[in-house]
Image (cartoon, rainbow, N blue to C red):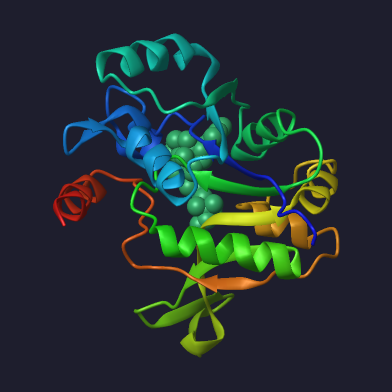
Length: 225
Ligand SMILES: Nc1ccn([C@@H]2O[C@H](COP(=O)(O)OP(=O)(O)OP(=O)(O)O)[C@@H](O)[C@H]2O)c(=O)n1
Ligand SMILES: C[C@](O)(CO)[C@H](O)COP(=O)(O)O
């Protein structure tokens, strides 16, 4: 019987959090008593304690992160890698730390509430179909902007994309060899642009990306559940 592929998670936390307007990068803001990024790492460890974790951080924050790990007695094993100037660059640096074959998840360090079952479903889809990209249905109506205003579009034609986004190693490596484009807002858009098909996996409304100040209120509430 074939051996299961090794599993990796590249947790991208290389941003500065400008929209959060906080004095520390948002991935380090404490929620329920510890930095957001520690919650995120724990979610992946709980899914698979043998997963290889690569955490991408702003170069100038690597020492701060080491100190935070000491302060919070955070001992879950992970490798750290310096980030790039964009998310694309940070993912690329994370990928350089993965050798050989396997399944590679990319997850935002600021999505700390992703459920174990969703991580599992994304890895399973990637093992079976090459990719597993988590997405949810919009709850609001959608209008498309047009040259003379806007027009209603059928909401059932759309999904809102989250992370994790999991791929077979060969697929994501090849995709990240191309130059960055302005419309690469996530890993699925990078992979799709080299002709690969994207398989969607149902996500969750709790898997928020902590982006703006009001998200911290939600985060404290979710952390209590
Ligand atoms: N150069 C970058 C930019 C973003 N990210 C990561 O990508 C995820 C999603 O990005 P976003 O929410 O936009 O984070 P920031 O770039 O930090 O926020 P902002 O856009 O408000 O500055 C975050 O976990 C962020 O740390 C990264 O690893 N490297
Ligand atoms: C990857 C992502 O979280 C999927 O929704 C999102 O595209 C990141 O966007 P950001 O502008 O870098 O926050």
